[in-house]
Length: 303
Ligand code: SF4
Ligand code: SF4
Ligand code: SF4
Image (cartoon, rainbow, N blue to C red; front, side):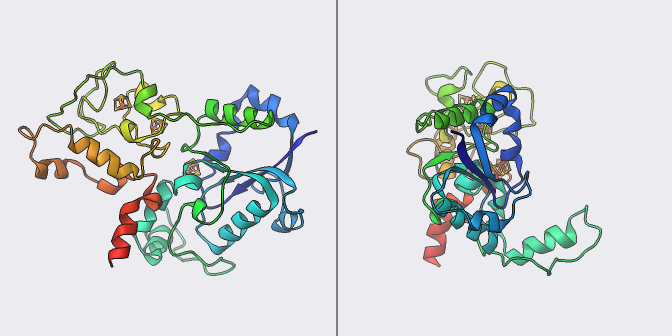
């Protein structure tokens, strides 16, 4: 019997769902085993189609994106109600993701930037008709509903999606590996790392074999969960941390900041120079996880 699934898109770029297409021939094996009961971005389903489904009647639901509006939140809660098993699909859904960096600003500032000031805008008007109420902050979806499985990545890499989907189709609960990205990265690391200069990703040409962090590039590997196959570091690009925090890491940004601070040679770089060499601290260390970070929560509690 086909497995009943629903794909829910909340506030997102649609990249996670698009990455399903990258499954290529695996998708051809998987699709006949699925009965898609809701996927409004692909099939012309409406909200009332979900509302009338009996509770718990859908085998698996995948949520992409986070709750930016009250409508997103309603749909998320509805998905939880209708699905036996709910999968948080992608980093936006799991940790808030990079669009949630808007949490650094007021909603009004974000709307003004997007609809009035962005270079590509022609009709400078903030939409006000049929627009759902926006939520003040982005929170990780798990703070609203209970999930059964988290599948991070921006977007999740196809081999990881294939592993998870085929396990679910076998009726088994997939288990993500519990190591950091450094454990699956093939680059050569020294026992003890010391760096004399922090470089930006575009500076110089990195050694093709050596650990990028050891070469002074901010590579988020030590604070990031494995599972993507280290696709970026294999290609010579430092990891930006899109798989989210590694196992037992409470705050990805804080973990990486402390890892970096512990390997700098302070006889060559002063703490002030170190701070100045990182141009965008939040965007570098918490690009994908700001709503899950403990630091803003601690600051707002203090206020
Ligand atoms: S996790 Fe990345 S690819 Fe997926 S919806 Fe968010 S921004 Fe897009
Ligand atoms: S810090 Fe980056 S380059 Fe170095 S081993 Fe870890 S993931 Fe690889
Ligand atoms: S290497 Fe880092 S940034 Fe690149 S896909 Fe993996 S976790 Fe994401």
